[in-house]
Length: 322
Image (cartoon, rainbow, N blue to C red):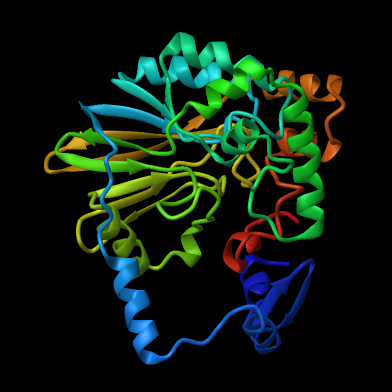
């Protein structure tokens, strides 16, 4: 089925679990879990949402060029390649937006690499969950199959992280602020609102992104969590960037992964998505030795996601192989 046909198949429909249902049926069911607001309550809620937050997070920098990535997912092969590539490209600093573990093998092996390179990190949902002793990753999935694989991944990671590594993760900040050139950016994992909020390109309208930037008082923000990179230059001149992840391919049929370079450019910034080749065959072998799901290995070898698909909006799902 072509991409256009896949998108057309979703017109007037909603994804519910692994099936498509009429959108009106979904809305009616969803209303049972929500509440209706009076005009006064709605106005108050909107006012509260857009009001600026008082955020004591210190600003780091200024930098001329910064390498930023998310979701290592235990992929030390890609992490090593990224650190080398970022140094060659003249990055002043390297930042990780969380999720050291999950999906891949031997999660604690990323720790010495991060420390030796001086990578500055924040907590993702994995770090927050592991440090607090949660029994699940708090990934934000709703589909039973997605949650089954998320549970397998989280339990493996939890069992292969030492107490010391968990303490280290718990000591990381939930967010950072950086200055690149003359612009100030907030670094978060999911969104400025929640660590596990999925901000997809097709479902993140400009007014919503502008409101988020206004609320946290920045010239833009950078996030991860979805695993899919995108950049939106907003009408106000702000920039919102999902930096992608380096732990698994971007569901594009390529074995490369991606990270982001943010560089000062006049009164603004230049955003560059950098493809990163690494020894994906060695990663696949390591995953098999650790008896991780073959579905995960297939993604590494083909570049196509085989799990965590149901969370994708229609447009992003249409670009998938499955």
